Structures are given as structure tokens and as C-alpha cells.
Length: 308
Image (spheres, rainbow, N blue to C red):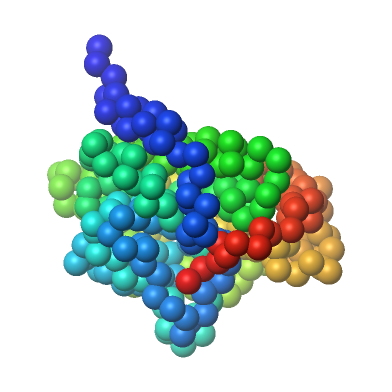
């Protein structure tokens, strides 16, 4: 039986051979951080660059290949060379400043792959839902590329390929668009998703019922259940847990003097051991290890690898 991923595997193997320094030592953009609502546009660095972006807080809006896109938390975007892309922070009243991973391939890497077409899933771009599996990979990739840690470049090559392989594998599991399969429920609309995400973010310590979430989205409970799974491919309980843990991870990154117990309390945990267990289940390490990962990293290299 033919391998349905044979073409993707060949492309990824070519990438692995081509990438010596994913950013070519030229200081291309490879960052994790917040983008102010009035901040700069996010674009690939010219037509010769790929862009890989995972949003973990707030939202980015814009156009890719002439199509409107909304990047809310958990959505990942891969834009190949030659595709027009303009993204900026959402500017609605009270909007959370976006936090996102941004990875840019250097021109030398792209040139080395010029003879091979980009995987079919990335034409004209790839937008993936619930791509939280990427976060630990991109977190490690950003830290390795922003430091001179021993073996960092070697690790970064594997991490980059692993991140893209994860995206490609997930893309083939994406459900068909609403209306293309008879009998398949339509997913939540962009407005309903925004209302639901705003409700969850405004009540970080709450454990809302499905009924309460349905009210926030303006739907009956039965309709909400059908549309929610079509939109997120998760149960509401799993979605809330992941959103809560990723928000807690951001707080651990940004509030260095706040104890793990205090962070747990901020998100409604009275038992820090339960918080630690759920944190590890989602992110693959304990809250203390998550915080220590940044403290153990060497100082950033002097060559600028900062956001534009």
C-alpha cells in the first residue's frame, strides 16, 4: 500500500539535509513574545521566506493569499514563500495583547529546497486548529536559536522538522469545511468563537458548565455541543483545560516572582498537586520545570534574532 505521506516525508528529509542553521546565522525572526495592539505588521521576510506562527494569547487578524484570516489561541499558520501575508494584533476594546511564536526560515534554507515543491497542505497556506502540540517544540526551538547553547543548532534542525511534521500530520486530520459533507454540523462562527474565548478568558478560575458556555455563544445546549466539536475537535472540558493551562504557562513566564501555588490559585486550583499533574499532562513538564527551563538557558546571542 502506498504511503499517503511519502511526498511530505521526502520534503521533510530534504529540509533536514538543507538546514544547517535554520536562520542562516543572519538573525532572521525567531521569537516568542507579545505584540502590542498598535504593534508592527507580521510578514514573512520577503518572498524567499517561510513563516510559521502559533498564537497562544490574544488574536491576530489580516489576510493571507488575499483571504481573511483570524488567528486565535491554539491556531497555527504556515505561509510558504511567494504568498502575500499581512497580520496585525486585533484592536477591539479590551483585547488581550497577542502572544505568539514566530519562526522564519532563512533564504539559504529556502534556496536549498527550491527544487522541491512545498507540501500540498501548505498551498497556498496552512491554517491548523488546536495546534497546541506545537508549543513545546516551538518553545524549545526559539530558546535554542536565540542562544549559543551547546548543540543548539543540531537540536534546532530536528525541532523544526518535528514542528512541520506535526502540522502536516494534523492537517490531514482536519475536518472538511462546513457544508461540504451532508449531515455534518456547521462549526461555531467566528463571532461565536470570539464570544466563547472572551468568556473563558474573563473567568480564568471558573469551571463553567456546557450550559453556561452555550449561553455565552448564544446557542442552545444541544446545538452548542454539535457546533463546538465541529469547530474545535475537542470536548468543551478538554478545550477549557488546555486554555487554562496555556494561560497559566504564560503567567509563569511573565510573573517570575509569583509562586506556582499562587498561579494555581489564579486559575481556580485549590490543590497545587492537581494543577501540576494537569499542567504536565498538557505541556509535558511540571510548572516548576516550565519556569526553570528559561532560567537555565544561556544568555541570548548578541546577533539580533528579535522580532522586526
